[in-house]
Image (cartoon, rainbow, N blue to C red):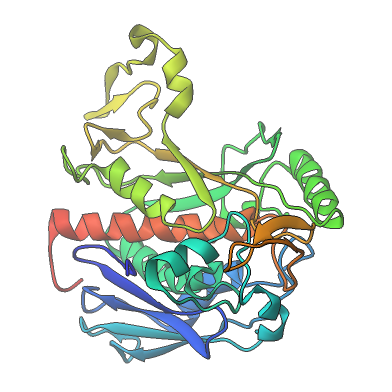
Length: 360
């Protein structure tokens, strides 16, 4: 099962939605990195359920415990094991799903592949698994801050047909988090919130787009053929639950331009070579060029909704389903730290490949 990511900064997540606990193991983190549970907890608090009325009301504290790999608040270079307890799972809400497949979910394909599935909350296919990713991403981001000048920020750019156009020039996580939808444009955020509230009242869900920006990234990350930086980022983002699209730089809008319009002239400034427009999104030929990395990730509407839908059971008989449980009417607000975490994991891994080193 594909539960691992990375070549030098290697991460394996483990656990199911309604199991006793979940977490991750990080192998390859250099020794000497200052690290405490508080450094990881901050990221988990941004991902945890029950933050506002826009998210699932499952109440999890998501308190992380470092089991190994850290001594006197510094990494040892050995595997780091992180544990997060599950405390508020209600498996009884999912009993009717034991023999029924939810539309657009992993229920059918998981059972088709493995011959067995944990129907309690989606098991391994649940977005609950991403708590381990965010915990690992917090460690990766701490490493990047120690050895580079890069900063990783993501925000909700669009919910369904409402798109934020007035993004502040100076972005911080505090600015992004000041609205529950995590859109830094307050006017558009209010419309997004209403849209999500309306969908929730209808027992439905909505999707949208998250934009991620990496400022001051190291130049030279990525490889020119199969190890392209954008390919590694795309693979990481598309591994997230509910993600159905990825673009970098001008992305699909670039297909509407001519080559003369899309090409990005070089310019020299203060002894550095830069591009004028950054339509490449900070990556050219699969390698980071030192410009801001800009990418967007498309999330589908949450598959599990309260509206009654047609489906089939394990015998192929037509059934009607209106699942219980607690689910996000829109995954975007809680997906912001997920996108940041996956970017940090990729960049930390590629930095170690590019520079090497077993200690800070």
